[in-house]
Image (spheres, rainbow, N blue to C red):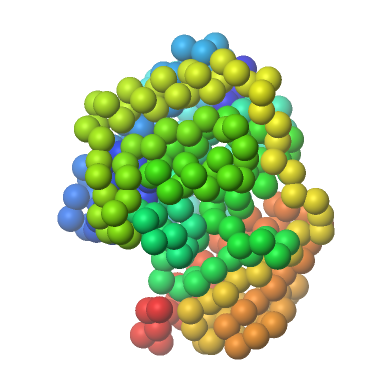
Length: 280
């Protein structure tokens, strides 16, 4: 059984502070250790359920957060910048299941810890084929595009609710309950990671219950930016259309282009925001 694991950071056990998410921030190194601990909990559960391979993708920010020196030696790791499919890098046909660990609620969910969609300051909302969505839906749709079901989602309670609403009877493990964007009631690290390990084993032991999440093509990605300047800059990308002062739209029949486009958007939006003083 081949298992793909995408690991974000905002939904990791014990984390609530944006400083813990960024290199140089207060608590970042500890955050990386917690992130690696959550990933290892999934790996242990996967192998307990009979996995023969677990490929881990560092899916947060710089994608250089997971501690390879502390990663379970049975897993392999994709890390580093320049990954065209970002949060779904390495996910291809032939995997039996995908797992999303450390994920968070979409932008605008009031009790979602560190809620956002792809970019925290630059993006207001994202829609796929007319339906508002977060990163769980975006990456699940990529998994469905290559024929792989999502078996488990871990993170805060809000993203677990979002995942079940989207994917039905998917296994979820909530490691914290949001109070507001930067506050949560946390499970102790050992307790949370034990629950993740048990959840991973439970999910993969019932793998026949899951089906890929399929979005029918063509795929239309709409982004509502927080700045007209960002919308204008992203609007010059070939294939991207402006459909409002702060809105862009992109349509394709190849979902891989959706994931790749977000990487380009992020680079442009980040530069425009930093250069112009636009922060939301």
